[in-house]
Length: 438
Image (spheres, rainbow, N blue to C red):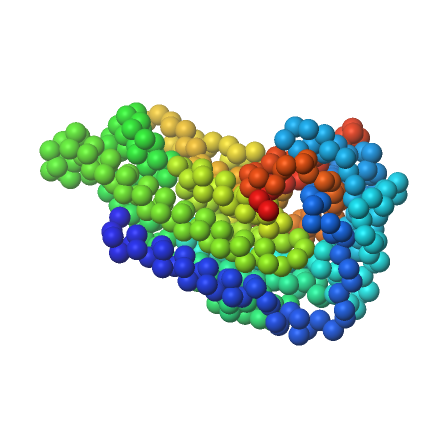
């Protein structure tokens, strides 16, 4: 990896941060288009920890009839008392039957259809096209699906933004559909993607990023397989280097260079996440990032992933990751939502035998989605349907409020677990929060 390439990351990161923070601090265009006054929010005390919980039945339908006594909430393994409890369904919020007033200041009336929803339940969508980690087909499908989403699911009073190439298009959030659609039209694939694809196919060729990753980790079996393939592809070039051993050194060098490029690209992606979340934290209410990508290489980036998840918890952000590769691996019979990771088997036509090819690009997006209370959507060619599911998922949920234990404001991450007592139901919520030191 060249020194010029490594220098691009900090410059792009600084630019991204400057654009996002300035854009998200005060979104004037949103205020200009809203004429109705904002009603009060549910949050009655800054000491309350509020947790959104999506409860579904066996058919994936939201269940909105539960009471506070149906929920169990724990922090760091210790049971907590629910003091605030309400249900959001569509553009209205209500205190559920059997709920105690507790710390809830007021009950919000259903929003007038001609008025924007309250800030506490207003949806904020950021559609992020990770053009550094997408193929052309996936990008085109995602752009078309996103424009359809704006027309069918994006409601009056909601706010949106488009991110591509490490920055927010037009440097602001807006509630103007036409502006968002125009921003989507202007998104183009990063040249770096095509360069990586060509490099993978050139001699000595790799069938997957997984092969390069295993060779970089010193896996001799995989190294030998790629060397054998290289010599079968071009025996003259193999012998010209001095035979298989010399070709092996070139295979290892190429694998390390490729992994280095992928790792640096992933760092840029996580840096953009960090700056985007920092900007979104300035807005009230529930925020959603829909992340379109083929995935990024997250090996050795555990701490950066944890930092992104903690930042999302602090900013009340959920991440919905859409794998734009579609049904190109594994079973085509998998469910659209929360399909478990898998391993495909790739056969090389010139080298006998099979070698399992594990997907090392999906772990990062999957972690970001699941640990922030969002969803990972994979093995799905119908991206419009996936976005409709996301719209439904972000429209119906419970909010549970409890007071954290004394002495909890220590600047550390505290785990949260939410469950229900009713058999046959599943619940999804974020995994924790950062207790900022006061």
